[in-house]
Image (cartoon, rainbow, N blue to C red):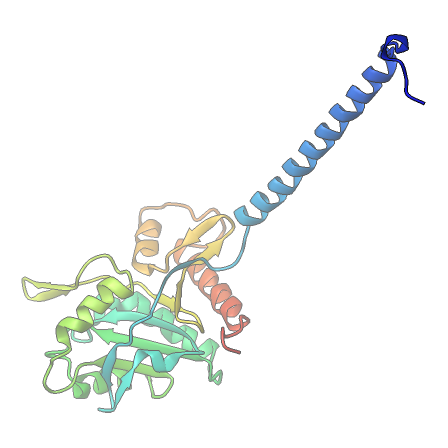
Length: 254
């Protein structure tokens, strides 16, 4: 039976029910908004205090070198190792003294661990031949396969490539240069993980570059490290924590 439209009356809405429905909707929106803000704050807090060593580059290109014993090798052979590297001029031993001493202590700390390696790359392969590198390596007890002293072969065709690799791939910022009878270069320690990523350290929220010359200059100026340790001592502690964290990480292909 069809209804006569003339007999229909508009529905009367209860204002109290409308207000109640509106309040429920508002409450749902508020709770949802608070939940989103809470989740966002948790993610932001986790990122701010993320203790993992930050990545700032990756070694995707190999560098062919000749090591202190005259054998040819490539840096990518160190894949699946955690390694410390630095640019050196062995004929200017004071130019990388602090990095050398730190690496020697790291060698002792991780002695017997086959997954830890050390690499010193000469900025002066024309004059620092494998024989010269071998003498410098012997003086500090740097032995293959754990510790490489790396340069170019007898034809020196790689000399420019080595310096460009240090600048561009290891992100040292400036090209090693020779002026007034001496080499100028950045001898900071670079940390490379199992997957060839370049890694920095983390001390709380602070990102740490392993520049021990800079740390020593802060100490000489009386600048506090914020602890009872010197800046250099604190930086070395961060380096050890970084190494331990990277040794616990898996290889991408494992």
